Each structure stands twice: as structure tokens, then as C-alpha cells.
Amino acid sequence: MAQIVLFHYFPRNSILHDMDGRVKLICMILFSVVISLVQSIPSFIILTAGLILITLLAARLPFITLLKDMKYFSILILIILLVNSFVIPGRPIPGFPLPGVTIEGVMTGLMASWRLVLIIMVCAIMTGTTSLITLKNVVEWYLRPIPLVPETRIATMINLTFVFIPVIFDTVSEMLSAQKARCVEGRRNPLKRIMFIAFPLLVQTFRRTEELILAMEARCYSDDRTRAVFATTAKDWLILAFSVLFLAVILFYPF
Amino acid sequence: MSKPNMPIILETQNLTHVFPDGTVAIKDINLQIRTGEFVIVAGANGSGKTVLLRHLNGLIRPTKGKVLLEGEPISKNITAARKQIGLIFQDSDSQIVGQTVAEDVAFGPENLRLPPEEVDRRVKTYLEVVGLSKLAQQSPHVLSGGEKRKLAVAGVLAMQPKIIMFDEPFTGLDYPGVVQVLRQLVSLHQSGHTIILVTHELEKVLAHADRLIIIYQGKIVEDGNPQEIIGRSEQYGVRMPLGKDEGVDAMTWLK
Image (cartoon, rainbow over all chains, first blue to last red; front, side, top):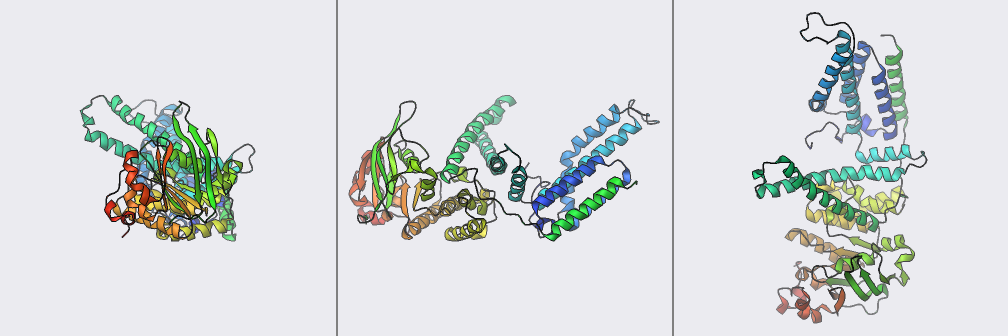
């Protein structure tokens, strides 16, 4: 897990890095919606080319490295392709040895997989150019007007989840090493070995959580905190306008 | 070394805490701490040191008795009390809430609803004070043990407390780590902070203290000048530091 860089933040100096996170999130949602709606191959090609250009030029992200990480989604993509190929009714592929596979099914499967890859790309651009702190503040800002939603608490939870993940991974790795030192490999039953890790990990995590709650209380935590300040510039509005125009053309022009 | 002319800043009156299972953690603790004092609270494991410390910050409510900050019960305005009484926990990992060093320091000031510019100013100032400015954008997870404890100190200092309490600050630290934390402690005391330090590793720090308190089975059994008390510490489960023949002044890891 630690090796995956696909959704990591890359501190760079780029147009998208400097963008107001709130506007960037709107752009990301717009792109995702349009990706979900387009039907024609030319639209897909233009969108793909557009996203590659954005990744390389506007976000200055390491495209090849990100592309390599797509392999983690290969099984999911294959399942989508296979399921569609067999389930969607249509004309059989002439001379194809497997019965039940249809031309329409393969085409729908290919498009669905392509859609998934493009949405992953959009997410990677968003997370690659936005630090988690900004992302958390943006989520908090958008949740603020919704009644009965504790936006600060949700943002804190998102934040603490990301803080705790490396700590939990470290704990697991230390526990594994400690158990290896006591020849845990001698145990054949994998279920037992999982239990040897799961229970102490659970106890440790709860203990840490309790300590963290106390530490947060000691530092006067409450939902009423200093709020993040955002600044929208003309550049942000221009990018938004350009994105809307680009997506409108893709969506409505009869390619 | 003691400060009899200074006003009393923190006081406990008949402070008693009984756990739900009937275990008496502390019993009838009457304590007066003066402004600018450096107090060491020592005791064997399970003697009630940490419970006492958590009462002083209002993290646990007493079964009987009360804690007064500048003559006012802390229960009247617990947030105001916690702002004045900073507590640094034993396990640094469990008190880190930020994804970056700077964000962690900002946590306290943000809880106090300070304006964003003031939060930024304090983050910069106190990272500078503890010498972590260069690591401001690092993940706290990658810091060394000594650096993590310094980060915890910066997080508390950013709330500008008058009293700073340390719970076993030397646990798990190597020699350079202990020296780093000790330097910080001494410099905080010199800058006018009241310091309350819980430890049983007296040989590392006793030379800097104005007063030594020994807790045994939940009660204060010794309270006074370290020079006079240190000879009796072992009967309460606190090891007499090496170098006793050279006097209390030699009991420090700072040369």
C-alpha cells in the first residue's frame, strides 16, 4: 500500500497547485460527470488527450509513474470488461471461440473501463495537486451550509484517519517482526496468525485513540475552531470557465 | 531555589480520585505551586503521578476536592484553564493530530479560535523556539523521538500557557533526545514558565528543580527541597540517582 503514489500529493509549483481548492473540486466533479455521460469514441479520445495534457502541463505530475500505478486497478478493469461482454445482449463476435460474448458487450465494457481510468486520472490530478489539509478544509467549507451536518467534526475525522494510517501500518509491521522473532512461522493455521495480529492491534489502536482524545481535549479541541481562509483569483474563474466550455463542447457537439 | 515570595498559581485541595472498581488513585492531595517554580513529581509506577497531572489539566474530574488556578476552581471554565495549563503526554505519537509539523502546532491556536494570521505567527514563532522550523512541512510521523517530543512542546507553547506539565518526557529517548528535551525544559523555566515534571528518572533532571514531590500509593509523602528529600527516595520506590555524593547539582544530563 505504501508504494502506491497514484493518489499522493506532489508538492510542485503549477497552475493547478496554486488553484483555489474549492474551484478545483468543482472542476473535478464537472469532469467526472461529463466522463460518465459521454458515449462516442471521439469524445473519449479528446477527454483522454485533455487529461494527459492537464496532468503534464497544468499539474506537472509524473504521468508515467501514475500510469504504472494503474496496474492496481487492472483486475477491476478486467472484471468490468468481462461482465459487460457476457451480460449485454447483442450480436455474437464472428469466429470468437467463447459463446455468449457480444460486440455490443465488448464495446460497452471497453467504454466503462475507459470511463473508470479517466475518473481515476481526474482523482489523481486532484489529490496530486491538493494537499490533504486543503482537501479537508474544502470538504469542511462545502459541508458548512448543510444543516445538521457537523462539518468540523467530519473534517477532523478525515484528518485523523490520514494521521493514523501510517501509525497503524508501523504498529502492524512491529508486531509482525516481534512475532517472527518468536517463530510465528511455525504456526500453520493462517487464521490463528491473523488473530495474533488483529487482537493486539485492536487493543493498541483503541488505547492510542483514547490517548489522542485526551491529548485533543488537553489542547482545548471543540467544533468551534479557527476556519481556513480561501482566496479565489481571476485565474481560478478563468480555469473554471475554460473547463465548462471544454466539457460543454465534448458533451453537446455531435462527434 | 524555592520561590516563597511568588504568588500561588496552582493549588489542589483534598484532591481524591477513586476509580469505579474502588481503587484509590490519589487521596487527599493538598498542593500549592507558585509562579515560576520547577517542580518534579516522582513516584513508582502506579503511584498516582499521571492521575494527579490529568486532574491539574481538568482531563479527569475528582471524586472529592478541587483544583484551583489562580484562586479559581478550574471546573468553572475548563477551556480557559487548559489554555493556561499545557500538558505534554508521555506517548508523543498519540498526541499528534496534524498531517504536517506546522499543522500540528496550529491545532491548539485554532481551537482557541485565533485569527488565521495569529495562528500562522504562533506556528512560526514556536517552531523556531523548539528548532523545528526546517521540518515545518514534514509529516510528524518521520520525526525522531526527540523531535516528536519537541513538536509536542511547540504544540503546547503555541497556546501560550503559564504552566507546562510534562508526563515522563524522557521515556524511550536516547541520550541526544534526552538532552534536547532537557535543554527545552530548562529554557522554558528560564523564560518564566512554571514547570511541573513527572518522572522517576531523577538523575537526568533533578539539578534544575526547585522542589521535589514524592507520591507513594496515591499520597504525597515528601515535598520540599530536593537536597533534603533525595536521601529518602528509595523507600518509596524511586531510585536514588547516581552521583549523590556530588550533590543534587550533579544530577543532570546537561553538562
